[in-house]
Image 1 (tube, rainbow, N blue to C red):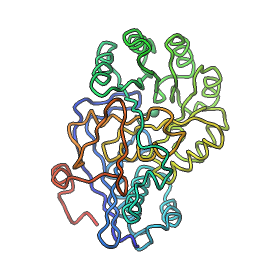
Image 2 (spheres, rainbow, N blue to C red; image 1 turned 120 degrees about the vertical axis):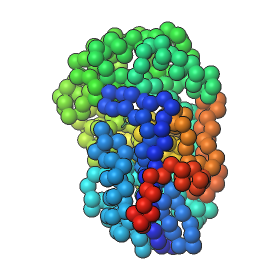
Image 3 (spheres, rainbow, N blue to C red; image 1 turned 90 degrees about the vertical axis):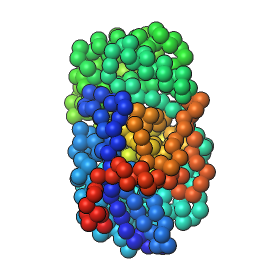
Length: 373
Ligand code: MUC
Ligand code: MG
């Protein structure tokens, strides 16, 4: 079956609780819905969340590269010729979220055509994941409130706390307040989004030594090559590469260079195809993974759990699957449900999401229909 058409539809949905972190802030989900059409009217969907502060992509750049460069390259190819598709996409450097969305929408088409859930085509290890919730910058009292609400309402017991502020004691106070309030009923780990220097991060880790953190992510810039290695050597917990390892080659470089000891896999930037390559690479090297969140909406979150549930290693830890809860609405006919701290995959062909066309019509921003392919 051939690919007949690729659409890139910009939409905007406000957050009820904006997320603030060291490298930026998200108040409105200004994402792109990518649809890949196959013959016989089969349509696959995926979501691209632009993160200019991480990859340099914007909503306009994603839309433009998908419509003007990627669509003409892949229309006419067979849906199973994924290596040809990626060879063509990789003629353009960068643009990870745009490429990932095309890849995942294509996998959705493949699953629908084969009548199989994509999670089974990928690996089929389990049908759900435990959920980890990301908590953005705020005061200790407000962050305790956020955790209390998510624990009570959704049963979530793993939390990633955003750190990287100055002075670092602002964040240490938050983590301490969370540990004191919730005791050992929650798992806590931290993500600095490159906000601290190596020496600030080292002091912060020492100040939190008694707080039983399980992971530390991107506490300082990976470009501070020697500072990063020095920090990783003294980290008492696995040091997670997130934005510093957004493709397989970077994963190799960061791990072999001693600049990370665990890797965040984000389907939003490596799709299913390259997330598989990152996962297999980590598995071969004996390196742990966490399924990360690119502040995804529900389409993107479903893709994350579809991938994470597919493998033993990616489902071992709680995945970051809940930040869509902070959005005022979404695009699915059946919204995702987190209960007892878990999110399940759906036993249906493809990735298991159906777009509510009325909602898409309401939130889409391309009123000029001539701009879509
Ligand atoms: C994360 O893990 O860093 C925040 C910025 C970004 O690029 O992703 C999010 C979450
Ligand atoms: Mg991160």
